[in-house]
Image (cartoon, rainbow, N blue to C red; front, top):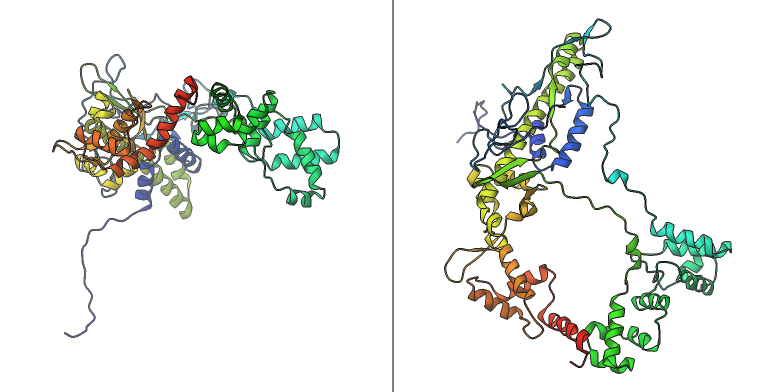
Length: 519
């Protein structure tokens, strides 16, 4: 066969990851809070984008956005009854191109007569005039978190005591350096030689300063070990006697629940030892954690579901956190007539294309999330009716095949998305669990429901009926769950449940607290 050069024309189809499509895919995996930040950034960068200040739009499982921006509502303003079947708009999928033609979610207002006689927007604040972004320059959002008062940190709390109790400037410098050496639990290292070399003083002076610092509030601060931390707190209560010191010197026996050896080491009666152990348990092993004042941020659900009167469920997106933007066609028409430079015209056209695509992407994202969430509810309806026992095995492929989408799209949609249900707020990923076979040939069981069953069996244990992993596996086999002992051990450890030996000791400690260690 001869080697020749020739020119051929071939027609092929391929998916091109354009910047617009990459943006649409990126929006899918963002939560509503993250999406709001992204939209705020786009509003600052794109002059043709405007925030929609109209009434919040409600997305229902079958609701279509109306022309005025409202959801599918009845005469009373409530969402219409929704069947779980979703039809209509095709959700966004990386394999499907988005058609930008014919999309009418644009901001197009009639020009008004400005105060100076020129055609333009009416002044902000005027009656019936355009208010811009809320009609105010104050973007401060009133919330409960903004009303919280600042609480002192551990360093501020200790520095205030240092200034009051120490007069010598050298001791103040040593104390300030030791405060900086505290870890998050309130402990300090035992090696003072590097500190002495750094400060140019003796180790004895550092230890003397440390003894005074150990009297600071909270009790137990500046300890070098757990035993010393507990001893400082007991000294503050005036309870550090001889038997208690012996108990602190044998904390490893206390961890093993070796009551007979502890009774001999402390030289006290069993009833006295029980009282001492209870007092040790009331102490704080990490005193610095009391100054950890991080405000926990609540989870904001992206989807709401609630039971429908009669039967079925109503599924809606959280419109409070769902950003809505429009394209200002009137402003585009004004500036497009005034631009003369080719570069400026290209910039304006790019802004229009980017704004139009963002509006379309937001709508398609809402439709896609709603469709995926509705199918998850349909597949896991047993969970919402009967609880975790009704959770069935589910994987991404099951949802993707049911709604004719790609698995990667379903994975992006379910990432960082939470749904408020009658049984609580759950991440969408929670409803995807692996399957465990049935020993009697029946339906498979979800791994999450098996974990719940293992925990339920362990919670029913007593000191005399503690179940080993083998016993748990046999019990589950009798209930029709085909599971091995090593799988039971893996699930137990993942839930933070100790072994049967440790559980037996802990339950024996409960009896010890009631009747003494010899019981």
